[in-house]
Image (cartoon, rainbow, N blue to C red; front, side):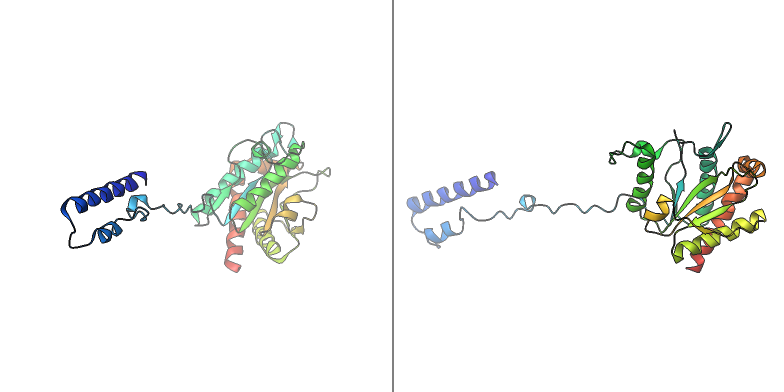
Length: 252
């Protein structure tokens, strides 16, 4: 802008000099000078203020957020050296691939053995467990997804308890999703379990979209434990959950 104004000043001085030296032109000197006002706005395109760039949403979107239970220092349920977190991750990865293969966009909230609480820098709580849960719920707000499927393994003092169980929110869409997944799991494992409302569970209380917790079996039950550790059986679990999700999407 300074260079632009300097150029106009020089032009005005030159015209004034010519007017004095040679007399009037076709245009009067005042007309000529009026054609070059000092305060004329700059019209050069490179001098115009540029509009701020429009940034599109940077975070991913998906239909299904797969919440992989536990991780890192949090091993979840255990039997001797068998940890729930490892089973959850193994099945969740298979579920992700199956959903993707069927054209359903999915996202894993962890794809390796680490604690989500370590990613939580915003919650000042001294409780690692609270930071973990709040991080999981925060991801459901930041990542646009339609449903949440949380993968877990059950445990009970009663060693006879066995079979998959799906827990849901106290609302219709979540219940429908739970029934679809539970039905597919029952068919695969020849069980007759009914899904239940998971009132005490934090995620089911705070997540806004339809959400379920899939307890794939009991680590405390010998038969379930053998099934949960078998890669082929893990694939069958993932297939059943994927089938339930697909049926839910078709019914909506």
